[in-house]
Image (cartoon, rainbow, N blue to C red; front, side):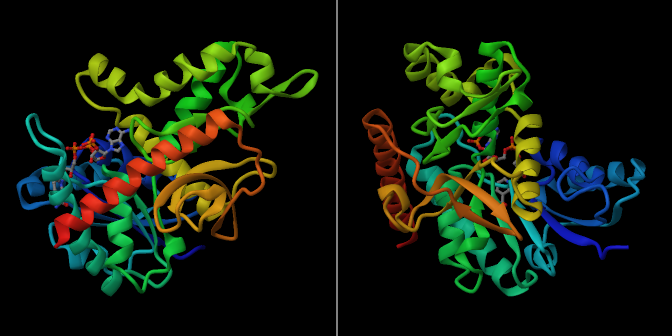
Length: 331
Ligand code: NDP
C-alpha cells in the first residue's frame, strides 16, 4: 500500500474548504489508491466550525482518510505537508479599498510562506486559490525562497473549466469532447479565455472549436465576458460564491500536476513566468501547460494573433500593477 500523502487546506472551515476536503478524502484529487492525511488550518474565530468539519470527516468514514489535523496553528498545519491548497484569505468586504484587501492578504501569505518554508515536506507543491490568487502566490514565492518556484502555482482551472463548459453548451455536446482552451493571465476579470487552439472530438475526427462554433463575434464577445463574469453570475443566483466548482477545479489542478495531463491535452495553470509568449518574467501568470512526472511545462510555439496579443498584454499590465501594489503594502 502507498504511504499517505499529507494535504494542507487553509481556510478549511470556509465555503470552498467545506466542499474540498471531502473530495480530497474520497480520492478525487490524488487517486482512488492514494491514502491521505488532511491538515486543516483556519483562524481562531473559525476554530469551532473547523472542529465540526473534522467531526463530519470522521463520520463520513472515508477509507482513504488516514488522519485529520484540524488546527489554528500554522506551524502544526504546515508540518510535513506534501501538498498545500491555500484557500484562506481575507474577503473583500463592501467599502474596502483594493489596497486594504491586498494589504491583509499580503501579510497572511507572507507569514504562511514562512511556515511552509520551514515545516513543509521537501518538494511540497503549493496551489493558491484565495484572491488575489496570482499575487498571493507571488508573495508566497518571495517569502519561501527555498521552495522551488516551479512548486508555487495559482488556480485558473476553474476559469478553464468554465470555458470548456461554455463551448460544450453552445455546441450542445459533451464537455469531455472539448479540450485545449486557454486561460491567459490573471484570475480576475482581465483574464483572457482563448479558444483559438481548442478542439472538439466529433464522429468525423477532431475539429477546431472555432470552426464548429462559427460565430467569431460570439467568441470574441459574449463567450469571453460570460467566462470572465461567471463568478458574479453564480453569486447572484446562489447568494453565495462558487464553492463546489472551485473545489472541483482545485482537485483537477493538483491531480493533473501530480499524475500528468492526458496525451495531447493541456490545461491552464497560474505559474511563474519565464518570459514565454513575451509575458513579463517574474509574474504568476496563467499559461497553457502540460504535466509529466510531477512537473508542468508551458506549451510553446502557439501562434498568437493580434486580438489575443492585446488581451494577453492587458492582463499582464494588471498583474504588474498588482505586484507593485503588493510590494507597496510590504514596505
Ligand atoms: P470561500 O471559501 O468562498 O473563498 C476563499 C477564497 O477563495 C476567497 O479569497 C475567494 O476569493 C477565493 N476564490 C478563488 N476563486 C474562487 C471562486 N471561483 N469562487 C469563490 N471563491 C474563490 O470563502 P469563505 O469566507 O467561506 O472562507 C474563507 C476561510 O478563510 C474562512 O474559513 C476564514 O476563517 C478563513 N480566513 C483565513 C485567514 C487567514 O488565514 N489568516 C484570514 C481570513 C479568513 P473572493 O474573496 O474574491 O471571493
